[in-house]
Length: 355
Image (tube, rainbow, N blue to C red; front, top):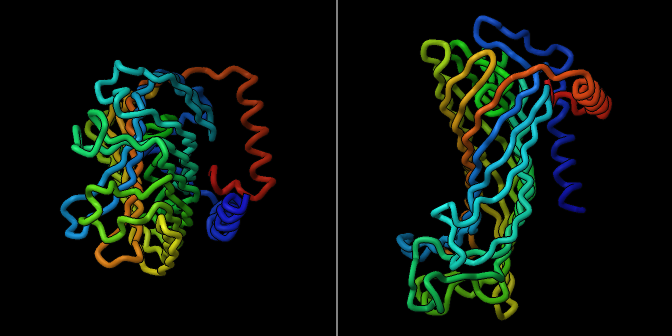
């Protein structure tokens, strides 16, 4: 509950900055892009999510990369106006990267993007338990083909909110929400802020005993961190002959950060430091008035310091999507429900997230 309260507090502090635009929303330049937010977007999707918890060795050349073992999923994407949701089922062994020998990962991943005409936000809620050592097949210290750690659990909670400064000509919704069509090349600078809380824990030290001599923080089995600070970035969509598009978005977060570590013997250490984190996303696709085909990737990197010299951690999350959607008539019931939700969100003071 404390984590949720902290995230809501950060959003409430950022809200007044964005809310100034709510009463004077961007006037869309229709010569650059068209919106179809009052049509229903519906279609199949393939999605692959992966999270990696890394620990760097003393010389930096041998990081341990603990990865989740999640199969590619096949599902359905549906959206109308400000709300877009998807459901999917795992393909299991049909995904060549998914192998039962890598162990079982239990995930509760509700990472959500808030994508409006004037705002791009990432709301993080990730809990993963069960990792395997990626890139180290058949290590001599493992009992099988992979070194599996079902006891390791990582969590990330927080929010990164960015204001789109040129939302009149550039649409972030076209490549990632599928209710718009960018017809001319355009871009925009982004500014904002973020707050992140995360932790990782295991029943024993993260570093296998056989490798402890290479890691100054080899005895750590629990760590947590907080990060907060400003964000700046840039986004651009290149359009070729109105229909083919390539979009790139990158933002850097200049965060103040604190790391707390605990060893297997119970020793505790805390450190404050500066952490420049990175968020990137990209898309390539073909867009028309009635349908859209797009492949996209969203990637977040949180660089986490250690109390030991020449040691650090990294939490990385990646999401790959391939989506085909049709834009069709929505009927009467769906618009009525979504419009009621929009009014409720505006009443609560968070309308700036949608506009």
